[in-house]
Length: 157
Image (tube, rainbow, N blue to C red; front, side):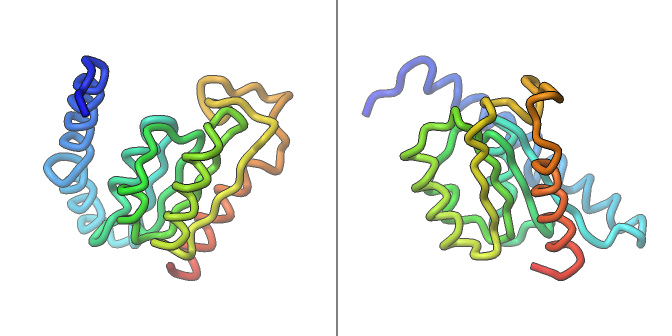
């Protein structure tokens, strides 16, 4: 399989983001903050769009996070989902491509059975962030994410 220029650029972006958000930069800072403040007993991570990819990468074995979440995910790779070890909440929109999304979620739930997913078939890709429009958001949608994190943090993973 040959790589296009776009594939190469995406690989460079992911490498940069993984370096900046991974074990070499952000994670050590978070650990230092957590150890410095005894009130911080658990950490969670949430990502939107490309941040969902990062949420997945940070949810592997040995993660410092208790739970993670993502909305309108992008750049899904089943190989990443296979390695998720903490509960993850995934909130796709109507714009996500169904086949890869369904397969990815199936693998995620097998790898991390306490994960949760809910597809919002009446919302566009970006509905939680840049394309958020209050009149179009049903007020009960955000509690899906909040309740998931509350349960995982209070009752354990």
